[in-house]
Length: 284
Image (cartoon, rainbow, N blue to C red):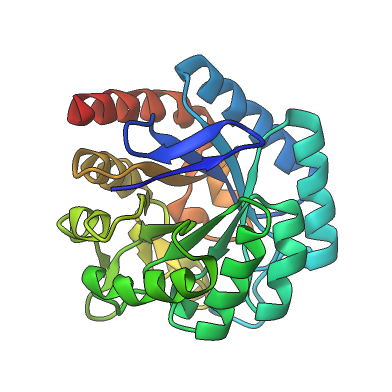
């Protein structure tokens, strides 16, 4: 097992630590909405005494359709993240998509994320590892939908080649492709990845996606089973997950990306309260 710390915020994940909450919105829609969601989630996590990291994407580069909303882009997105950090003094997690983006993203986000489809791209992983290692940040790596949990050891090894013994990797489970238009989460993968010596999180939002199966767009976007988010989250925390990755929206059906998979903002507190109890019970 392992423990990682963000010194600037006093947040730790892993051995003996509280359940880390990485939560926010899927993609940045506006500055005001980002501030609203962060304010609500930070307050919830403070009441529950859970470490909180704000999550959002500046660009969704893997949308089903070329006409789908992708976000404000790198420059504007980083400005919004800076405003969120200034307003609420919280760390930020966001994904990057090319090696060239690693440095500018890590300048703003304490945790940078390798998208699941790209987790075997060596140049991308190495660039991110170098960027966070220089700033005492974390590299959050989504396990690909086609990758076995134990095969993540190769990702950890790549990061270790450039960071040495202080490996900043966190692995994230988000389901495996199961036939067409469906994902399945194998909860045995949680302890299998933890056995590799790094903290592990669960992306309960994307684990309930139905890729290319949104009936509202005739397959032009990803569908989802919103009612399954809490089931996946509770199961993964019971299986030993160190952190939870969730997406919320004041009106999920009007979210500009992955609405069928995200939760109503008002549901955050009861769900996180339950997850905290499960996490404490498992650790006890």
